[in-house]
Length: 113
Length: 109
Image (cartoon, rainbow over all chains, first blue to last red; front, side, top):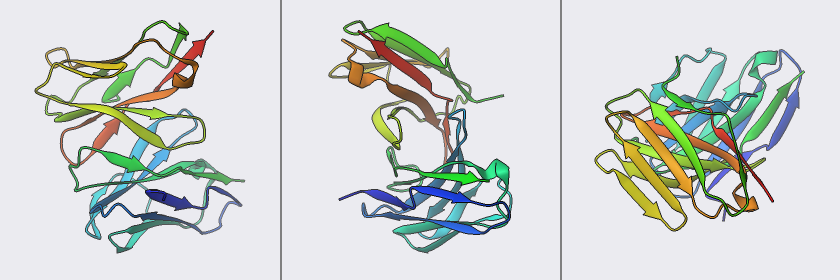
């Protein structure tokens, strides 16, 4: 069983479109995250939810809207996609916001053309 | 500037030891981590060290922490071709974990 799963794995879309990436974890963790990894492998946190509540919201354009319907899911919706949004997006989860170990999904490679 | 810095590349011969270095700026860091990312995959936690420890050993991996200099290193003994990957140093002081840019380890025969 995959601990943290994201769908889709690859996403190619045109500028201006709206898209969503889904994430689910079956580890029973309280806290989930979205990270963005750019072409130079720089990994930066975007959002974190603990028990469905937003606890970290880094300086991310408001075109990005996370949604956590329950503790096991954290989806990322992106409006009006731009070329600069092209990156690999990773979902992760941990036991609590200060949990020692974060488990990462396989990543979603988003390409905006 | 970045809070966690690493060199971008390291090339070693199979069987040698690899040492990947990292410096960080947050003196309140509680945990420091090493993650491994293989091509096309997510990050996998290799090991972590609590800030009141100096050293942690786990099979072929040795982590050294110099809290005074805010320097963390990962030593991989008897490096194998399967160790080729990107290694990320990360620190966590509060809620926000901060990652370095990753060191690409290339192991050649």
